[in-house]
Image 1 (cartoon, rainbow, N blue to C red):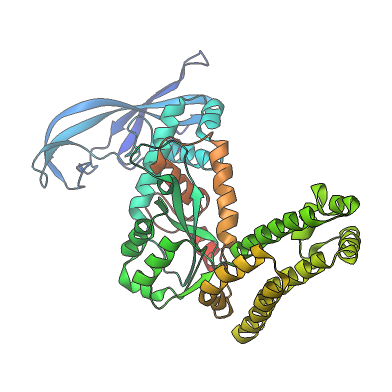
Image 2: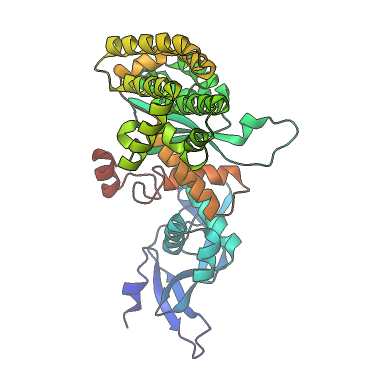
Length: 432
């Protein structure tokens, strides 16, 4: 067998291969350093002038036919011309993060942990979970060193709950992550700890004023800290208040009004039609209801005029986002405000006051029709990632896993040396 073709290294040749009879014992491959191989420092890559001694090393390599493989070799120590210190030589096939295994084995385990939790993968490959976790963390940190936040024109900013445990000095906002998503590619470009203003400030300072100037639109919820940070760092960007958060507030107001009307209903049979399992029908848009649900609403509105008014207000307010432009949307909102005052529904009146204060951010939707829908979808992926791992103790690792699973630290996009792969460039071009 031509062992040199299997263990093809630039600085070493195969001297001897020992295959034990026992299956549980690894295949031992003895390597010998080539005479003409360059002697380079493992720290700075400079040449080493003097050979001082050597170190006996071994590194685990990829398995062959189900048998573990261990490479054994001598690693020379020499005087580095640049560092002016005695250093070990650079060995091209060794993993810089884990000297006990080869780079190709470390990279393979890294790819495994990309699609499965470390604890499960440790069982499959029969390795200690802590060893796999450390390898995964170190390689993710190595990729992050070469990662550069791409230029973006439209971003979505949202928070996701990260952890329950906290210290006495922290408040609830410190237990969240601020997740920044590129709307066009639907990929996470950065994650910051906490949902304070300082978290988004750190992101804007990281990308710098030039890239901040390229941002044309930002979609967020009504979190005041995010609004303040945007006004400071991206004053020319259009801030869009997310339509789904507006719809959520409307659902809460409609539900509170429904509860209020139920208490006022004299007929017991009509109360049953508006409560219990039927309560969700009142929150749906009419276009999303089934024929059975439409007939149910028609019966409720026929017997009570107040429910008819509530349904008209809800449908009209939701139609704001169907308007052709800001002027038409503003006209619809004026009608809703008028109807809310005439109806005498306190929750609806309170909602209109809140939306009036935020109207400019709502109106910006007609300039840049973006939402935080991508962020909400990614938040579900993050929650699944956390449940799959039964939680994360190391928050830095959690952030890196988010950027790996939902972002561009994946091996599909980046190689270990920080270069974009051909597949990654194609996916970015296609907006995937």
